[in-house]
Image (cartoon, rainbow, N blue to C red):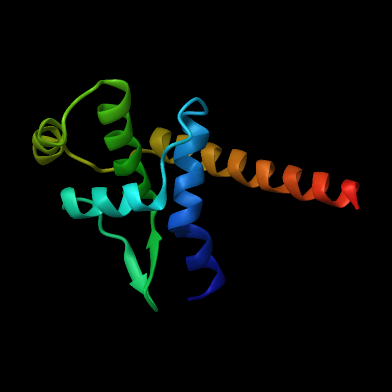
Length: 121
């Protein structure tokens, strides 16, 4: 996978952190939850390379919507499936910026943690 492609795709652990950044009070999104949602929602289609999942902006956006509907709105899996089946999921520029800002927050947090560990040594 070339660098540009790798930058545009996120691993499942990066996606978990993006979802947790969006909801700092809810730190319970684990990779197994995302894999479960993958099985439940046909709209989530990560690329699999060497048995690793890579998610693009469209997949991350769908995951953010699923998380919001399930966790914030209290909907059921079946309710979310109905909404996703009749919704158009083309990502507009505003949504790309939101996802990008979440990714930047994630990267800054990662850098901050590295700096803290360096200062301890």
